[in-house]
Image (cartoon, one colour):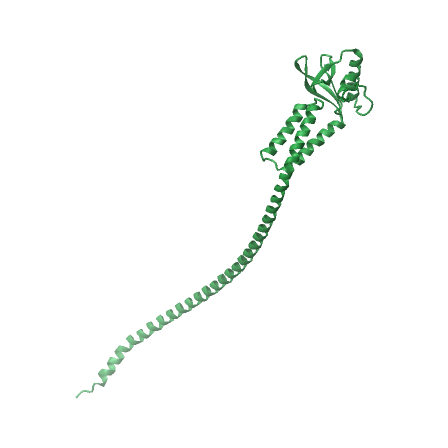
Length: 258
């Protein structure tokens, strides 16, 4: 009987190349898998570091936002306190303004009467300025405090008119016609006029309190009026001015001589 050993050995020898090939392929795959694992591990490490950095940045932003929120809350508290104080101030000012209204009404009336009864120098303009201011107060466009300040400015303007001598031009009524003339204002004491046609005169107040523009009738009166104009044109605004008597008649005491 023939021994099977050579046959088995031959089979092993024939299968050895196939087994070696399998081991080589497995080793290659294992190396590839190890490389992939290392690459994934490196990528994971990078992503972990990136995540940590983003978390730190987020924490810093959160801290900064918390600081900003606290700062804004403080600012809002300060604004609220300022608003409360302003509201109290407005209420106090409103109360004070209401107290001013009766005094302002009386002042408007007194100043209006003074302008009406005084020299007719730009009377309509001055009365209109007063009426405009009173209208702004009545319509609520100006608070009483501001109206009082502006009214005082108008009073100062009236006082300045009383202190200064000046040359000006304005429209007057002569013989029923409106004529643009030169005027010489001596404070608020006398108002003289000179027309381009050579006529001169003054403003005088009649027994009924109305003002009219009188014409100088004689040479003496005419000369005195012209002399006042000449002095003011020469910038002589302080000194002695000889004014026709009728131009000052409104200054006489009731029943007295001019």
